[in-house]
Length: 380
Image (cartoon, rainbow, N blue to C red; front, side):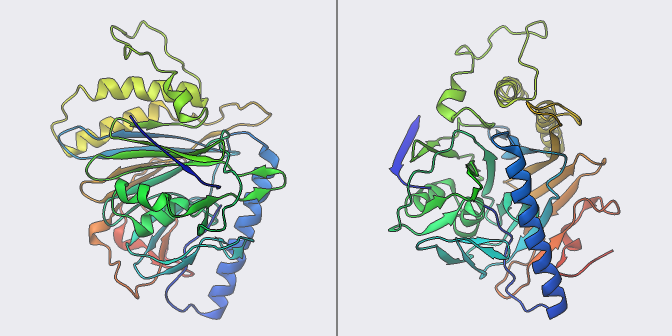
């Protein structure tokens, strides 16, 4: 196991368009982003330390068909209002941007996107998940154990809502992500007295993987293809201790597994079923994808599931990233549909506009690569 430590201190944003937008459309878009940001603040403020953004990431990187990764997004109370956003190369971003808002930060990072990407945003105010044109995928997951430490103004700052986006914009491999992580500082967003706590998982077409978490004010990285599953709390070193050291050797359907929707139970089940999945030999890419999604659904949270406080938390959506073939599939839990974006067919050239798509549009299904529209416009 490789564990890299870097003294570092440690959001959420939409991408910026590289093209001009009509003033009326721009005003509507800015207003919508601001409303999304304030909705995010209200949601997080009401939650306290509850896992608002509870998720499970499962990487299957040793089958014969493709390097595949699933991610479920669990949300309180019901939906994060996800939006798919396709960004070209050449966009300028700043590390202190939160949608149309700017947070106070010493020495915010500034960069131009090196790679095009397709991501999912939350409440039009943050990048939760995505993949870039090189096949690097990134996912932020809620982690109450996060402790970003004090701000080090000597390092360019990137608020944690842009953490995944920054890596997708600038890195092609997990190794490059780790190098970038050492020269920037992920910084928190504070909502009232609560610091938004996020961890980051990344993987690339080689099957390489890394889990990045801020624990005790230090960046801790678990790097290696063996780190296939990530849920939420506890911190990753402690989560690994939840697993049977014998890999559940001899277990059958008659042996009990943790069956609840909390992070610990999801982490154990995902590892258990992935271990058995890895023993299978899918005969086609379609079979491999369907097989991994069977595990993703097993560790999803059914509609109406209870949380620690009055109310419910449930899986909002699932994504399936095919890093080998550059396809990004989105499955909402609000209807039966699988929306597939083929990044190899998208034009990410400098000067292209940012394009978006509402995955909750009940009129769309299947291949959606050419259904994205320029930000601020509506396509029926």
